[in-house]
Length: 174
Ligand code: SF4
Picture: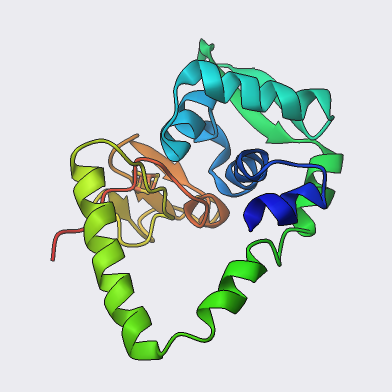
């Protein structure tokens, strides 16, 4: 389904995942390595996917100033236009699920959460999330421009940065 929807835009599903990763991941952790982790592939494969998007003019690469071995990903203006058109990506699957009773979907969600959690614990899956709910998040402890603090990277964050996805999000134990 996602292949058919991607074909209409001239993109593969994994290329669309890469564009969404670049769009919604905090800029200082939107790296090729973290993208590889996010989709569960090797660094080499991730580089090939990204290079395809660079050739299409949708993504640009830059070395991280603090560590030149790390490559950061950014959307180009053309890439941002494509991402703005992806609001309905995946609608075919949503429509198919629409006929399933809520109770069955709720059971499915519980099962799926258990699988994701087990894979996360085994290091087989990275689930990036915004700061809220992360054990390292210390909200409203800074100043107006950078109100929040991350205990993991020991840095203050803007509110906008805290709303972006972080692959190091560690859920608070309940
Ligand atoms: S580790 Fe947690 S608090 Fe720090 S940036 Fe990532 S999500 Fe936010």
